[in-house]
Image: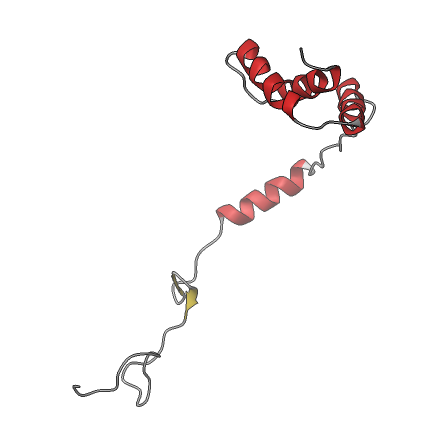
Length: 117
């Protein structure tokens, strides 16, 4: 009792679903949802696009880039030989330089000056 545009739209939704435990039930639900929507030629356009991707006509895969083996070994050796600088500290905000203690006027923003309230 559903028109062919709604059926095609429901099938496209089902075909693009990543996982489906019960396809029959899912299709029935999709048919009910799609039958109430006002659908037009965009469903046919979407189907043509989907079909060309499934056939492989519109799909262009990029070839993976590779690194020469000797360069990969040099880079790996560089990372393996890395020694961290003991004079640098890293905190939640990133690099924190060492500062001398007890400088006059050195105070964190938003904290009250010495003395009580």
